[in-house]
Length: 84
Image 1: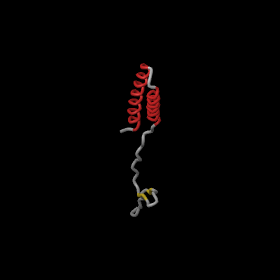
Image 2: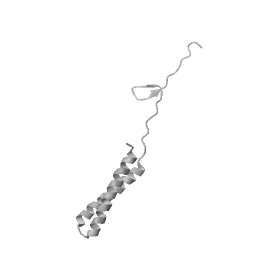
Image 3: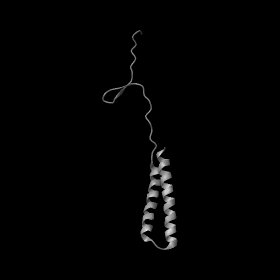
Image 4: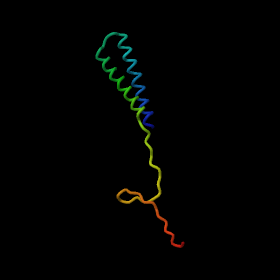
């Protein structure tokens, strides 16, 4: 799964649940400790959405023909013109 999509799905769902909880607590007018928890969840959801915006797509390295030495360097095959 793409990292951006993963962050957005988690961020939006947590933000919606926290928003519902905050609205419900404010409508009842009590339970201050639960309000603090839902505000923290709201901040977590917004943070995940921001991470989703900033996440970069991981690019796979393209195939390059050649030989990889033991030290990790890549050398291309050299063709010898024996007959020419």
